[in-house]
Length: 114
Length: 115
Figure 1: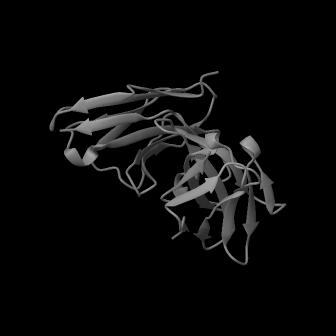
Figure 2: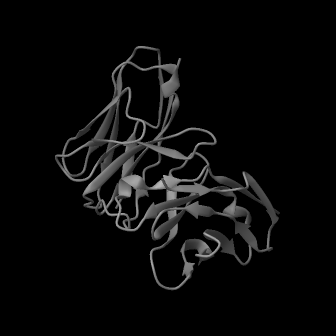
């Protein structure tokens, strides 16, 4: 039982390049999330998927797109990377979307945009 | 809007001493409170949560937290700190009846346990 896995662990991009961050969970959770973590700012929600087939914007969605490929997988795409997107990205999942549900996090992807 | 504050960016404690990491919150309703720990270059790991019931919540690795409604606080505690407890700790709050997407994180407290 691996929990939440993310690939890649590290990535360096040039401004304007695109990339997709992959996330998968094996806990049979319905809901999945993408966060970014910046120093001194805690975690901010980029996009989430309440259930398979649905996605919605979070607090900071500009410059990102997501795809809920199936119940297990939720990917985050940067179409044209900018230096402001340099951050650590975390995927999380929870059994459901209610506020009592605990979110479980992946190990993160450290992205640098030059 | 809900918010959470971790008033101390850094907490230092000697190994074997009790530790406290502070958290205060603001919500317009019943609060649901969470603590997570992040070790270097790792993801966040869930420690414990308060939803309802007993104000003292016990969690993983010997940690506990006390919900205090009158002081709007949810401080994380451990009776005897270990060097391996050194990590970044995040408090998070949500609101009863809300959505998990509304989970709001504090800015984190770096705990250093000195040998």
